[in-house]
Image (cartoon, rainbow, N blue to C red; front, side):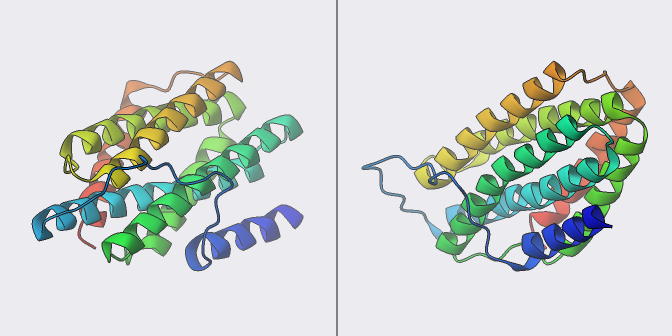
Length: 205
């Protein structure tokens, strides 16, 4: 019951409270971001997608922490969720600076990611960790594509995305170190398809 209440509290804070990171938002000192209206629209769409990704990360880690019976692994998931809160705060702040809103479908994204995290957790700790590895690899890949798409003048967004990419790679490495198993190709393909739907929709909605 305590875990369920904790998960409910985490969901409410993620979706409706102002996120507060523990690390300062990465910036490039001395570089001023000046964007055209078209560049601002592109940056807004991409940062909205990244914000959704962090909403989903909170849901995944919360669900996986509930599912595991291993206290040390539960602590690992909770610690990773805390680190992802930095990303949530940074992307929210950047959306505010761009005059853009988060996705209107955030409760739906959260619910879907939470369900996936529970399923992965029920399949065993090694599979759950394997799900983390594949998720982080796919996130790292799409962040790389965002670095290619973001306007070159958008130093603020690019600094945030670059740090997020480094952090996601570290999370994947940590999951591997904890004994993650490789997921089947079919599972990876389904995850990529679901991510495509999410990123395409969140860019505009």
